[in-house]
Length: 321
Ligand code: UDP
Ligand code: MG
Image (cartoon, rainbow, N blue to C red; front, side):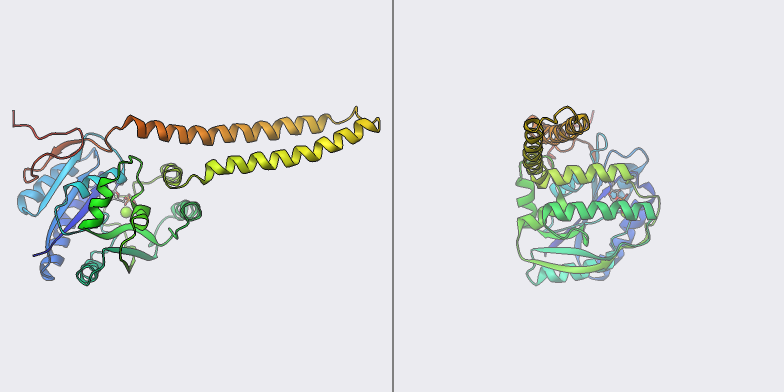
């Protein structure tokens, strides 16, 4: 019988684990879907992993791991994919903002042959204005850069085992899960869902973490900013040709003393462009540096008893001391 794995990255979500495990268990049992739940605690500083342990003791179909520190949601998702053993894997938030009620629909589409089922947001749910604006800006930038409509897409999706194996085989460290499933292709279906209100606790994203996420994802998926440097260079050159002609004309007609304003402006403009360009290039070099170092995406420090064998990352199962 086909098994559905559900991957749930969790960062400081001790209040959510037990409830989420219960809600999913009830739903999937009711729909007679064989399942396993894979909770990944992303270096939580509260009792998230203890809660996962408790849930695993109560229900053998729950398993999980703890990271040695906070590696970010992206790493959590990939660790979950690595631990998941099901024939299809759903990734969703563990705060139940991704409504479990669409899971049976995703499952049905998968049974009918879909290899990727994308969750599409119909509304963003209730969020603070600041969050809405920064998330809006984030998706605007992202959609432009990756040439995919990111506004409605989310990390809530179902992947067939084939697709999971493709994603796990990617050598890159700086991944962007949301866009990678588009990139991978495969037979894709969509389901619509409405973002729910968070069950407990609060959102883990601040304005700056969202901006950092935007920049790092944009650069992991697009080299457009790098090409922008060339474009800016061309614009500066055109601009300087015009000014050069003007300067020469002035010189030849004998009115060349004035023009300090132009000099100052030119220094400022060119200096600004140069610094910005260097920054962009530096950012990409940093990304190359990170990739070349080849460090693992995450380090697992603990797993629940029912996790079999070695888990990828720096962690290896050791006999109990
Ligand atoms: N999350 C994570 N690591 C992080 C930040 C968030 O694993 O560093 C998880 C979090 O526990 C939740 C999901 O990612 O399950 C979405 O986070 P959150 O609800 O804070 O974001 P929002 O729903 O507000 O976009
Ligand atoms: Mg949330």
